Structures are given as C-alpha cells and as structure tokens.
Amino acid sequence: MSAPVVAGPRLAGIAPWISTGARLVLGAVFLIAGALKVVDAQSSVTAVRAYRLLPTSLATIVGWGLPFAEIALGLLLLGGIATRVVAAASAILLVVFIAAVASAAARGLSIDCGCFGGGGDVAPGQTAYSIEILRDIGLLLLAAWLVWQPRSRFTLDRFSSAGDQTRESA
Amino acid sequence: MSSSKNLNARERARLASEQAAARKRDQRILISVVVAFVVLVVAGGILFQGWRSSRSPSAAPPAASSAAPVTITNGKPIPLGSADAPVTITLYEDFHCPHCADFEEEFGPTITQAQESGAARVELYPMSFIDEGSITAANAMACAAEAGFGQAYYLGLFANHTLQWSDPQLIELATKVGGSPSAAFKTCVTRRAHADWVTSMNAAADQNGVQQTPTMLINGKNVEIESLTPDALKTMISNAGQK
Image 1 (tube, rainbow over the protein chains, first blue to last red):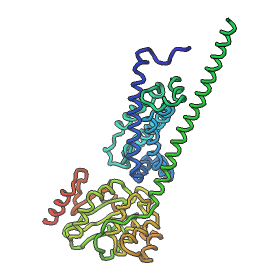
Image 2 (cartoon, one colour):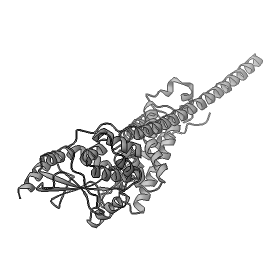
Image 3 (tube, rainbow over the protein chains, first blue to last red):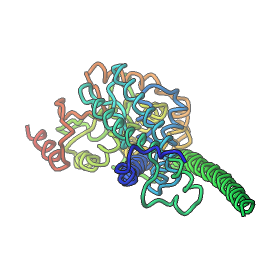
C-alpha cells in the first residue's frame, strides 16, 4: 500500500477537522449569498448587468440562475455530500467571481460586486474591489483545501459507500 | 496447505477488486445525482424567477386622489401634486433601480403624505439606464400622468418593481390603480408615444449633474439620502415650507 497523501500523522489527525470547518464556512457563505439574492431577482439581474460582460438576455438568465447555483452548492457543502467534486465546482465559481470583479476594476467601472445581494453601479470612490477580491481569494483557499482534503466530520457521505471512496481517495 | 493459502489470497484479491469496482460505480452514481441536483435547482430557479417577473401586477397602495392631466414636455419633469405647494421635491429615479425601490419603500409614504396635504409637490425625472423595463415603465408613467392618474401609477410601478414591465403588465397596472384605462393610454404605452421624452429625461439628469439614482432635491437643494430617516425628511419638508 502506498503512503497516504497527508504530510504526517499530526496533519492526518487534524486535517478532517480543518476540512469540517472549511466545509461549513464555505457552505454557509454560499447559502447566505444565494438566499440574499434569490429574494430580489431584479437586483440580481441588475448586479450582473453592471459588470457589462454579458449580453442582456444572458445577463438575465445568469442573474436568475446564479443565486440558485450558490444555494445548491451551499447545501451540498453543509451536508458534506461528494465534497471533493462540490468543492472543485465552488472553486471554479469563485475563480469566475474573482475574474469578473478584477475585470470590472481593470475597466474602471464603478460597481458593487453584488456578492451578497444589492450590486449595480455605485458612485466613483464607493468601490471596494480589493476587499471583495481578498474575500473571494480566502474562500477559494478553503475550496482548494477541500479538494485536497475532502475527508471531514459530520457528513452525510459516510452513509454511502461512494462517500467512503471519496474519502479514501483523499 | 500452501494451495489453500493461495486460493484464499486469490479469493481475497478478487473480493477486493469487486468491492473497488462497486465503490467506483457508487461514486459515479453519487456524482451524477449531485450534478442532476444542481442542474435541477438552477433550471427550476430560472423558471421560477421568469414566472415571478412576468406575472400580473398586484394592486398598488392606496393612491392620492387623481390629479389634473399633465402635459408632457421634452426635458421637463412630471409634476405630481398641487402646483401651489410651497415645497418642491425633485426626484430622479429609475423604476427598475433596486435602491430606488428601497428609497420608495422607506420615504414614499412621507412624500405622498406631503403631496396630499398640499405641503409639497414632486417633480419626477424618471430615468432609464437599467434595462428595457426602465424605458417602458418611464414611457408608461408619462402616459399615466397625461391621462390624470400619474400619482397612483407611480406608486403602483414601485410596488411592483420586480416585474419586467411588458406592455400587458403596464396596461394591467393602469386597471389596478386607476380603473379601466382609455384606448389612448393603451396606444400611448404600446407605441412608446413618449420615447423622445424618456431620452430627454436621461439628458436632463446628465445636464443637472445627477450621477446616481435615487437623487432627491428639496427646493433645489440636494438631500443626502444615505443617513436620512423618514422623520428627518418630514422635518426638512416642513422647514423648507416655512422659509
């Protein structure tokens, strides 16, 4: 049998607990962010349009659908279901968010990221791109950790043999 | 002895590989279920929001008594309320701007009350920079003011700001707030009769240095909305009326 991927016995002991924390934080953030946006679809569409990256009709679809994607990922993370796959999808989504905010900053737009509801154009000088990007990078690190170490405590995965596989392949 | 040992080892290896294959299959199923779950939630969400934005407008809050019909002039705002009110409240709003809807929810009642008591009149600059619905709503707002139910229509537009504002929705809103709309109103909405005026509103806002919505001025003086409370606004209106 090959040696486990984990660095040493000490990390092997605490890694599942770090993963548990990462999973719950990332899941809660996605769930809250999605829920805040779902209630006001008009704002959500406005927020997407403010990035001026997508044609009108596509921006509407994304504005309507994205909050639900966040809720779905949040629920899966909180439940600890197929954690590695879900964490990878979350990481991709976060990279897209970071790229979108960075592009808004680079193009000199004055917008609110609309990360937790709201969004749209703001007065010049009211932008908070650095904080928004730093926050997303922090969440990206959590997602990356979970791709590396998907094993964690309190998951629904342990009730299925497939989940065992996901964890053992860690 | 040794042959049975071999058999056991082979048996164990076969079992292990079978278990591994079963786990792999289960894992594939789990991932398929997870993907299907996300796709269903997102597709269902899109359909749900589409339905929410295309449903019929609900009734508006009780509106002010109908005002006199208003003439729509390019570059000029829509006056709402008594012409000899001592205070003029100028509003720059987009009917699809989320902050405007928040503003209206918080301060609308105070402003409406001031209009009804004759303390203030509103000069409304409906702007349209968010989307197509901003434009159709601004045009319909002008049609409604022209037909004499501008005040009620204004409240109805913000009470239903999550709608996309298709022509049928805009006409139905008129039914909800002002009784059966005339054929002239319907034509005004569907033909975008005030398209030029709608454009002129954006130009006027630009010219007046308005950079964001909502923007509010009391007797020509810009009001900081960020930290405003309804009570403070009430005081500001009554103070402005005494000067």
